[in-house]
Length: 530
Ligand SMILES: Nc1ncnc2c1ncn2[C@@H]1O[C@H](COP(=O)(O)OP(=O)(O)OP(=O)(O)O)[C@@H](O)[C@H]1O
Image (tube, rainbow, N blue to C red; front, side, top):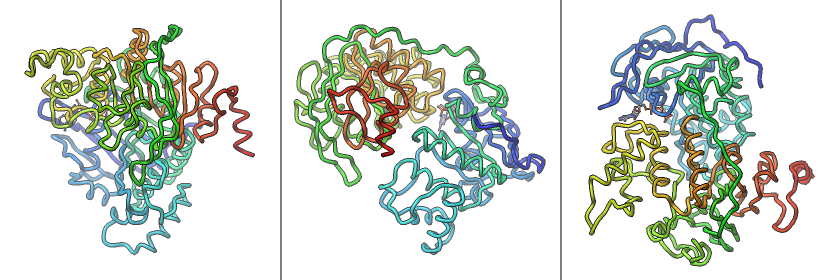
């Protein structure tokens, strides 16, 4: 662990001071009298369960939304931040969880769009190079964004902020899409920035990372500040306790039941890239049996999205050949998503707003979209009472914080909507469940609960395929793990025969071919270095 450093320039007076910040949405008090002080050079974590009010507070600081009451002091002066442009002019930058870059433009064109006036592109490219070198964020300004990895795209976002010389950088869940190596690099950059006096507000559910990086932390619960701590003096478990107000129950995975019959099979699934930036699937083969959870690891952008589309049948583009995907021995590759769901497939997509749920529709109507076979429709008529009751069960069983089944999906915090979508699929008792990033953006308590629910579904005899970028999560819930790299899928190996390091190395596409003995991490590294 990196040694705890004192925030640089802590004596210069606060960079940011919030007093009594309150934000009321129609039916929810999202922030309720929040006080927060951030010193120059301080890396300050904001911790809290899903729906605690973290994003709302950051949106207020970045001028996206106005507080209902309270005072913001920026470098000692009271200020009303009117817009993100105003925030940037003050020296406040924000890197959003979902990057906002134009894929068909180059790096330098993207950066130019965020700067005032019409900067000279050649001069700007040199400045990008210079900032990249200074902070260890190498990226070629002439490259098109679509050709960059997620880690490189994040570098572009950070460079874009740095070119505006921020005094405060807000980072919302910055590591959720990064490889462990990219996380190390990001932390080096953030520490360097802090040493130069830039303050950083850091939102994350990954408590071990918070412990390693952040000088101080403020804990929110129910829109209020409920605690402060120095993360280096805490454990992830003690911080989780502060966040959720009780002891975190670790996930328990008993011995797997002997797996039963093959429920989901992929056979020689090959398909060309479906758009210029897509990935071709090459000879993908996999079997998932009743009573087991198979995980698919890999860095995003290696064909996972294409694989998920081939599995769900959602893609409007030509589908796979029928026999390439089969459910319980019957070919379904040619069928659409409705027909597959009718055969017992449940699906939790990666993208919750837009794919997992229709933003403007109520939770009840969103439940109806995939669960209508659960007695919610009779003789072609929607049974409104049954719809409400089903949505209510999802809300209660999965502790979704919301105003009720009538709440629109886009009024929920990210983590709460994720819990609702997972609940909706699990409560249908699917025979096969395909789940992509099931705990993405979900707080530690809810993530443990979701993982336990996946294991319970396995123990009830379902076959589960979990696609996740979080290796720890895959090792916690899965019986076997495969790796996706460049459109190919490795053999699925039992978790007890592999480790995080080996799977991490397989992500570069180097794994032993089927039929040969599993290769240890040491050997793969040796080959990779040769
Ligand atoms: N536009 C909105 N309209 C109505 N309610 C909202 C809106 N945005 C947020 N809320 C509510 O405000 C509360 C706080 O949400 P916020 O997104 O700030 O939480 P969070 O701590 O960032 O959660 P997460 O970790 O899940 O992202 C939640 O109850 C949420 O439902």
